Length: 114
Length: 113
Image 1 (cartoon, rainbow over the protein chains, first blue to last red):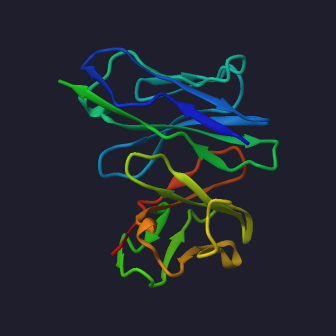
Image 2 (spheres, rainbow over the protein chains, first blue to last red):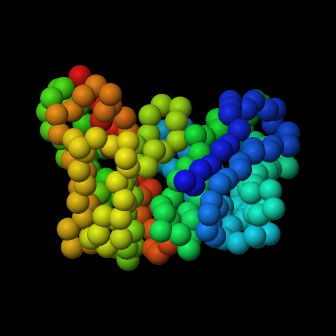
């Protein structure tokens, strides 16, 4: 079946550091890929998305590029802020497949130190 | 539209009791999902609907769990004979079509004592 694997946390960085959170996936159809973020005490919200190979999703300074050849969708940010401290989830929905439900990785907790 | 709404936000119940949660999706969304989230974990898929049809129920889910979406609008998730292991955050999400992002509610936190 389909699956999402993301790097385990927690990840601790200093403010203004470069961030990468790795995500790889397995899917048999044509997946759409997503990054969701969960801030402390809040619900899950969509951070960015990409729907086809080589698309780049971006929002709030975060970016992720849909790489079909490496089945990856790594999340990056050039300069993190304390306010980026949260849990980040990679997810997919496999279009063109009977199994098209949205599934999530286990999440990566990010701590940004001032 | 106020987004996805879940009720109640918190539920404390005694082991062995039945509980029911409600989810009101975004009005034009035809897909509705239920997930369970425990501390430090990602959302675990439970079931999903397209309109009123239940497309899949997780094989990990026991027969004590059932969900409905009558008339393709709101949905209910019922847990019968609750166990302590059922304590978790139950999340509802909705989307329009396949391959599109889902919007989440704030969740219902269940505590079984």
